[in-house]
Image (cartoon, rainbow, N blue to C red; front, top):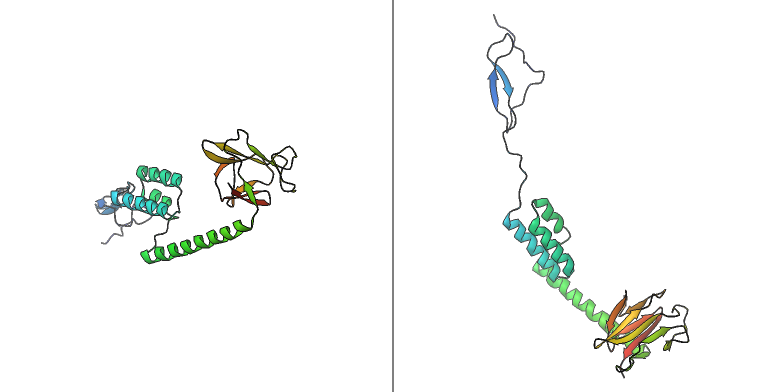
Length: 217
């Protein structure tokens, strides 16, 4: 007589990779029950190899060389690459640095060179049309105050210029332009000054909307 066997558990176990099948008897049945043991494969996460770390460092070096990373950002990311323990951490650190072919780099370099030359040409053309701002004598112990107030050494009567806008002084053998908390800001060669900036002959400076070209003669 043939007996119909039933599984001791409701769901039939699936034998797959990492499972081990063994036979065990069920209640009142023959020694022919199939159950499965726990997973046998390792669940440890993948670790970073030296080759992956080297590739990430090369990507950071190339990004810094192409101007995509500032010096501080490059140093910080380099420290994180050296301390990374998972490949995903390396991927995050280099995700914004696309790898380009030599031909692409050459084309981008040419475009950047042409763009930089065009900007310098435009700036030089504009500089010749701007009024000169004479730098004070290096022997002067006092800074040149600039603003709308009549007491300033250089008075600029314009609505965008603050009463006491900025000052020029000789410091450590260099000319230093300092913004004095103006409302509309002080700029040097198109970049806004936050605090102070070193300037020299030929630089373009602006106080609010009034622009000048610095000159020693």
